[in-house]
Image (cartoon, rainbow, N blue to C red; front, side, top):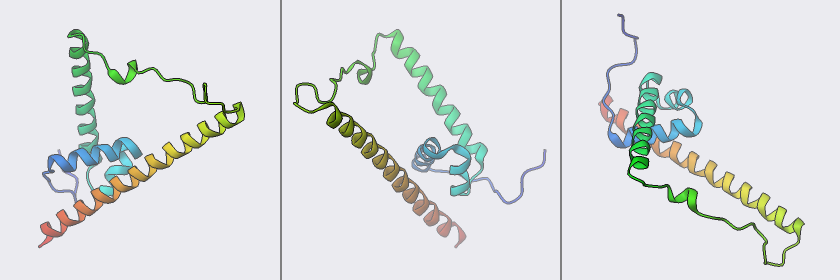
Length: 128
């Protein structure tokens, strides 16, 4: 089989892999690989291996009787016994959702920037 030209065999650190996978989960594997200048197949292989590991650990956890604490937390509806009108409750929920979305987008951008900085430093060292 012929190898693709332009992409040499590279070794990636565990930290780079973790950050690349986080970026891949947030914006998609193809886009993340393109931004990082790495083969798409490598990133997809890492993501698939992680999914298999998570599935295996959840199956073994259920067999041992371990439950996910995040799913067992009960939440009370916003505005209950707080004296807010229904309109205020809806507005606060909309603002909370918008705030959560903006925080997620900011975290994604910061992760992108951190990964690109590390990749630039890595390739600058490699080119010397």
